[in-house]
Length: 323
Length: 235
Image (cartoon, rainbow over all chains, first blue to last red; front, side, top):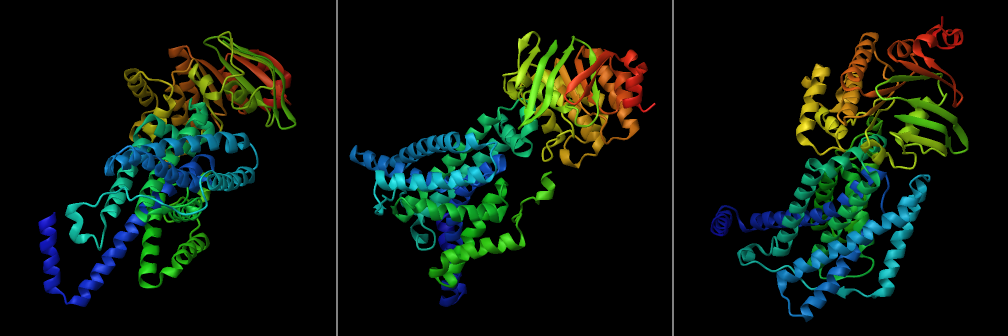
């Protein structure tokens, strides 16, 4: 890959004048940057969409799960550094710890904040979710700090990426590959395993799933655990890439990922992935070609437009179909 | 095999079942007829554990089941084909059938049962990779019954199997219900509004009104009962 890539690079320089090379490089930088951003959005959006698919609840505390994942990784990484661990081993151990800890949080939140409200009007669990989100943010602020904490860059720089580092960094490559692998695993889980079949059945027709012998409470727990694990991985990867975290990072990331889920069509797993990439690219190109001041404006303008013109999302099903 | 003793059930403050007593013996076909809103569907849902019984007892093979969750009740061998069929719309016919066998682990036997239901309803064989939601009403009913059979039930609960289907298909489905009962000694409990058909198919019948059983007898006697003739057979 290295040599051929470099030759190709030289060819491009020979063929085009300097400006068009710069233009293309910049375009690819934005494209790949959007891809990285999008894969993180997709990882978090999957948690929203899976939970919505099964219990029709927007889990507003999901962003906080992501934030808790990042904090867990920071604490574990700091400890491991003291004990003399290095680079990749820290990344892997910290991610595993973050996944376990965040999953435990996701599982517990469902049991105490949503399960008792399952027969209540739909607004009740929604309010409970917002309360949970505020509670968790403030809990972390009090237990940790309200300052931004530096997060070690756990992702190593690869030698073979050296020539492309200005367009696509090693960290971005790792983020993209990790996200793609995790999404492939999730697809396998949902499409081909017994638990995945139970999840799909519960999402499509909960009463019939129960009549078929599915323990729906267990399916819901597994859904929360899976979604939380994905968010935790997203948290670790992005924190390591950006280099700092605080108690409120979950809020904005959560809302963006929610936007991605709605963009793709909430309740649809491929929709969440597509919506994540779509949002990532929209933000990346808008900030690159217009202004970075408007990054969030573009994201939420997109959300408003989708809600007005295509409320079922890019590949979502219309409500009428659900009956 | 199945016994409901003074079963009550509530939806909020509304008492939908007011002390229902029903009993089924092994290998019987029993029907429950009555007007809309009499509590027939609620009775089935109470047996399956979806609507919890607020008073009384439900015994299956001598053991109380009214405090179990629906998935535990299903795994004891009680399968229900609910009203409106409830096909998993975005799953293929094959996946729907596998959902029926969800509580089972014996792969070889599951495969044999798949062949059996495809034999019962050959039309499903052609549709096997199609999404459940794309099937016609009759095909969906066949799939719903097949799915219930995939659990190898000891007790099969059917809620309005004739609803919305063409007479020819209704006849075919009732013939197959009798066949299943004959070949596997499966106990069948049918809730029907089409009283005529139900009374011709079943061995015994119960008549329900306003949440209680008002009459029960052999079907041959119910058919000639004046009250039943007037209220449910329209003769």
